[in-house]
Length: 209
Image (cartoon, rainbow, N blue to C red; front, side, top):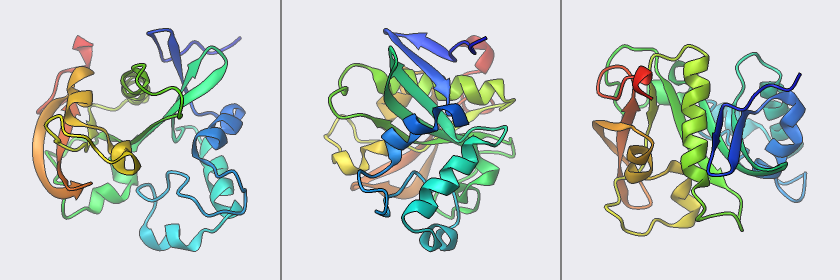
């Protein structure tokens, strides 16, 4: 029996990035040339030394292994059967964010982090990022997260360079129910980053969703 989607909204569905969906993960994150060393959404998932040591197909293999774990590396958005978006979500304790000197810990809750949101070219401007973020929160809560955080830019409506837009904006997170939990010393694309949270201290309780 097929697993029901985490979220169905605006005509899109969101599912965990299981191993059976790895080809769709590859579509969202992988290069056209399989030997190229693109990010594969690893730069904020693993320590810098480990990230730099992985090249070309090794990066794909690493992410494929992540999809085999009980906790999946993110969620995928679909328009029918076509994959159109990706959001990375994981326990903050498992990420370099746990040791960041620029992004503060709001409290001692074992929060999860959403740090990368990507929508395929040709599908932007349709609200997919909102659905992805909603799905990432739903997955984290399903896996027992007491709260979920994101670290978007506080751009006050100004245009964000597309190459750095993956971090999201404060408004995007607010639209999905997150609240400002802390300011940070980090920047992206020239804008300050903030800690947005849903659930726990400094955020909307998950039960209110």
